[in-house]
Image (cartoon, rainbow, N blue to C red; front, side, top):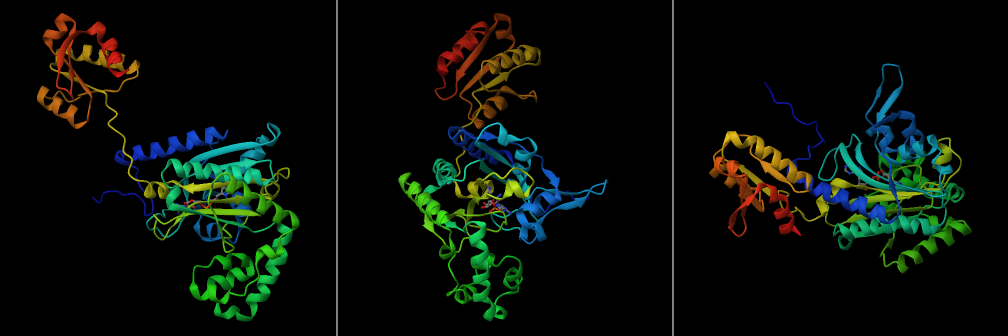
Length: 418
Ligand code: HAM
């Protein structure tokens, strides 16, 4: 029979890697906590219309990448392709806006997009992200970017990545810009790719971030969004840049950055890394001042980002931690097993990790295993020790060993690890 394997674009995270994952998760929890952000967890699947209304009908995500199905009651459901929409749904559903003037939330979890898999791009992948609701001011943008920067620093990635920053202006200014952009592209429209020709109708701004050189050439004389900024758009964007400079966060202005989700307005940003290859976007985000209203809530400004965890881990140096096993409990005889199990459990309750052998192997095999696991100490228990109520306690690094009373075991370990 053929063995059953993971679906294309999905991966197991095996024990050898899970330490790196836990390390990254710890950094995210720690840094978000320092900024006063609290964790939110939302369901893996939602109503399809949540994503089509927020991310946008014509985006790549909604038009071709979602895993959607009709449930038995006829409702269309979708495995979440991103988390901002879910967090906004939850914010509205639970009236979080009434609980505090500013809501600061963060999350981690799996997402699903039916993209063509390649290095750094999966069909099931993981993000961590943050969302802040309630402030329209650039100091909030600066806080969000500072979180991203601090996480990148702690992961050793800040010097391998560049912050691309842009403002796509508020809705009013974007409408005028869209018309001007269409006017500029129209005469040469048939020279653009099929995708761009479609985007010309649905979302011409996306043509700007085309990766094709010939299209960038055709766009040389395209109007600039900054020429269409309202007075406030301009003031806020300038302020944000001065706050980033004050915090020592380097950035490069990128007029071509528009992002592929429809809910953005004003500030948008991406951290890209040279350590990643073609899929170089480590983290992306921006403002979505109209989204809470679009999804039926009281108008509330919002801003956030999300980062691909697989991409972070690809960019981070392998940071495997030392063995977690403090003690290997060597059991010499079946008759001492219940004492071995009971003592091991007492030591674990005191906060130390203990491994025992569940396969009744020889002392030599158990000692070999203890060394392989990098255990610091071995405790050896045989018939004689059982009668004397002692154990043999061995320091595996030094090779010293001594006989100690079972009743003094935890004190002994505590004394050594202080
Ligand atoms: P996004 O740019 O679609 O934004 O995704 C954010 C990050 O998720 C990307 O920069 C990338 O690192 C990672 N990512 C996306 N797709 C894949 C994939 N197929 N495989 C591996 N990693 C991937 C959002 O999702 C927005 N919700 C971000 C946001 C939050 N904006 C405001 N708040």
